[in-house]
Image (cartoon, rainbow, N blue to C red):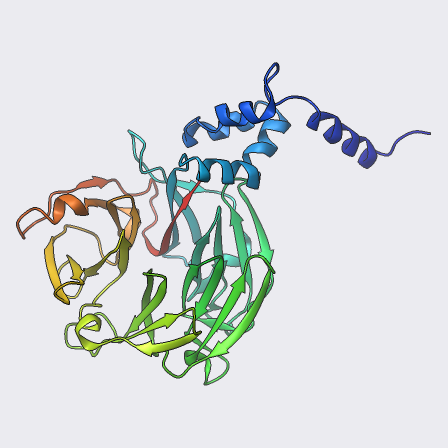
Length: 359
């Protein structure tokens, strides 16, 4: 009896799995050898054979690189051009020729959307749909597997929302606040658990309305809103996962939330964009904000951290890189930093959000 095409394919895949990763070596030794190849060459490794491609896209590969302290962080920026088209750009921050490149694979539904959520968890990026110019808030959610370079749709959010913030903590993704079809949405949040692939909805009146930004620090999620102007009243709240409750942040700390924030180690940095662009740091010991220095950037900006470096990503993905360890030791003024040219495109675009993924 002749095999069907699908059956033949399954047999071929089964037979290929019996072939050693590298001839003459046990698979565990082969894995340890290949895992030491820098991430910039992983695309070439995938071209060697289907077995190698599947290995480099697997959770086993991701876990081995992570446990062996071999994982390398790349930065991903979700951007929108003047025609409201949405694109994803990637940057290898450790390359000798640092430059942004566009990832051409993306779901068509992401175009012409506003108020989207953007998060990273494990080796995947998540884009939550937001709303359209003539469409109400949506609950669609998409996942981009960085290793496979593929998009998939994940289960819908429990709540249709847009202009919200999105964070990940302890294997869970949080979609917090925003606006939507119900008046109570600004005081609600949805939680997606990666292990169960399901969303659950919660509410708490302590969530601040009109969230501008969020960050994770000391195992807690902070959100703040009220605008980035010096004259506006900043409101901030913090989520405690152990109790599942929100509480207000004291005024001393909240007063410095005048722009996007990022955490490096145990320290919090905020980019104040109200008058120029100034990098500030929250000093936990004195409970005061310390001004580190001014930056020459293209507003509006987003922040992401890799190691001790803060990447300030502005319009067109023009990027300024600040080593915060060096910045803290120098005098206040115009900060000494390096820069990365804008993305190679003629379209002017803004950065919706930026995240790092380590593989």
